[in-house]
Image (cartoon, rainbow, N blue to C red; front, side, top):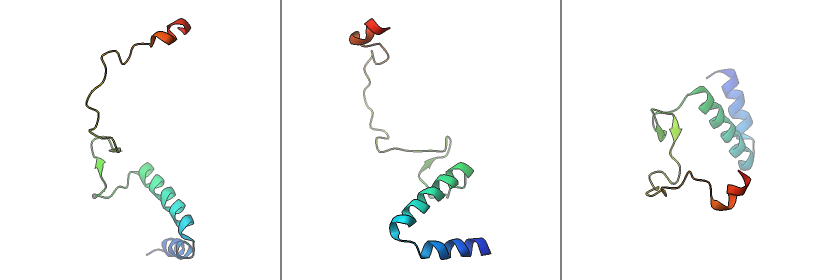
Length: 76
């Protein structure tokens, strides 16, 4: 292990749990930018995007979904 990794682990081990949570969020964001994902990560490998809580849940979309509602037509 490098000196930088050892120092990071030492700093994190002395932090409170709420601060460790924010450090973890920051590290996951950096990992996402660099593309270093683990194989167990639930990611769509073709696009690199994670599935959300409603994945596969959309069953129906109205035919007029893209149309402007009547109440807004006066503004257009």
